Length: 166
Image (cartoon, rainbow, N blue to C red; front, side, top):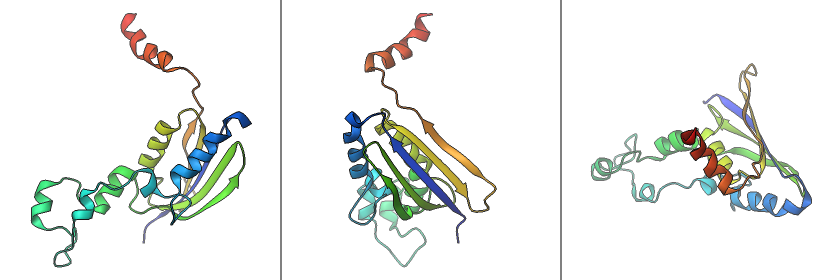
């Protein structure tokens, strides 16, 4: 049994003119199976679908595929890329409004930090608050408190160049 982490994720935009971003987020993180699906956000590489079980081995790979592909099993992929071994468990939408969308779900071991980073990258113009409470209850953690950055691409480029100019 894993140690569970309870995750709360809140996406918000500043005004109703930006409500299409909330709709886009909802469509981007959901699938037919789940309202918050890591597989929808960062899908498994196609090579993992080529993998088949052979003699019920622990990694489920035949030796030819094992030799050619690093990070070749679902467990390694999910742990290293998503940051947790399983998809979101029991996800629910806790608020669905024009300017705010929030979710709650559990994950094994820890918050899915790879998913957090990727969503921050995709939706940098949206406010995101991601909080986690680990199973023992003593470890509450704000994983991400991202305020949208309305600056232009030029501003971002100048930030990268300006330290070199000084």
